[in-house]
Image (cartoon, rainbow, N blue to C red; front, side, top):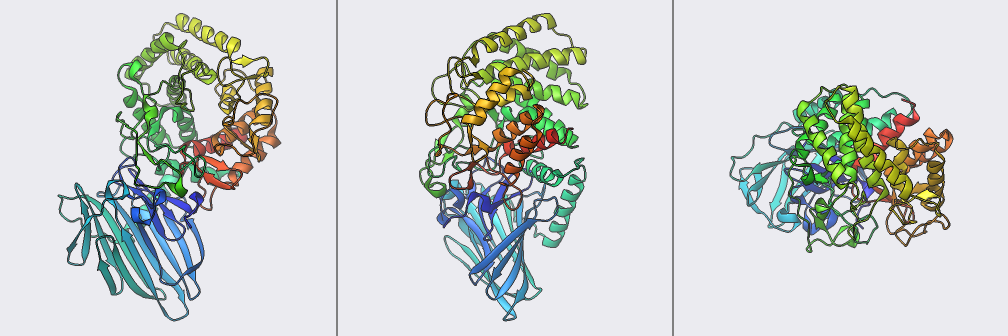
Length: 597
């Protein structure tokens, strides 16, 4: 049986990431960057598509794990009927070249000695190209085209075998003994990498995370959960560029066995302002400023050519294609690489950009004259396009519509430009911008609120409810106690909630203010939306209800504190790409809201 999504934990090094299963198998790794071709793809295929498992020879009867402190160093305890073993996995932060290091220790053994096996199956070219295995003394390199992965092992004497498909090692450990394994990613034309002292590597990695996490300013009952989410955001960031990917995975399904499977290994502008707020308010000014700088570089150019997403280094080319050799996570097909939504018009991004840059200024980041030139150009573009339909926040792939949130976010863009001009004494046509903001606002109030549904609805002329409209009070379009917002929240609670969580929208037809949500949604409950509701309830004075849904989401984190995009309330399991930036950002911001800071 395949592992559940929640059975995985994140490893990361500042440019790429891996998912390690609770059974000692690393089933997902894209090297050398987040959007690279995976060399382990068993997660969305099968064992034949690449993995690296280290485990005792005897069958496992119990497993538990934890991160060591506020780090991404993972310790997994593996128990058999005859012994107990501790497996420690990490990717060394900022290592050049990149490496995964694994260390296993025998803690207890009835027979005095126990056999440990390492089974490494590298697959290049999206999980299906067998490498050439090249030996050099006791080292082995898996080579294919431009890349070589070098395998090293230290410890007691071992037996090893190398075939076309596997590098296998078997080693016997006494109580207290350990074996160490390293996999290093190099260009195939480069000389073999230097051997790594695993103990020094572990010490350096733990020291990095300890020093980094000490910046956290959080206190209170949710501080540990918030810090774990912040560590996760750091793990999903590119240390060189400041870009933060939406998730390290592709094609983990929104509905198990379904076709809503997308590639999230890119940076979405829609996450910009909430991510900025989460980082800056938690004390991580360096990361917040790096994200601001990435954002400005990414959008540089003509405003009409602004994309909704970019790679972590700011590249624009993100072509979508289907990888038919991979059978998908629990047969959820197709498996997609790249994302065609990159070519969509999503007008909400302008509000996200302008709000992120406004938040950056509020948090004391130094002003940037070049950024202001870009911002003025974006507002000119908003003025030209705000009456046009788009694909919306949720990236619908059918016809464009006049999405209510898209209009609201264009109002946010103009509003934040006005605030920045006034508060930072920037040269701007404030009078014209005020008239533009008023025109957009009036249009939303006239067409976005549906009198029959007694709620703001997903698009003009529709009765479909949409949980993204919980953002209206969070972005300040209307106060949380405005009767129209209160009516919208009640409609969402009545129609888009299942098992105490919030669906984005109904996927089985139009939602109205009359009927309950389907018991079998086409996707899981959306965790960020549930946390947005917690924030809105808190602003409405419904503090116990806000805490209730916040605690509901906290309870869905896996054993090491990670959240996916969604939760399947029927199957009682996480679904969607994992771990997901927007879910963790929403958790951080909801905790801050509920704490009253």
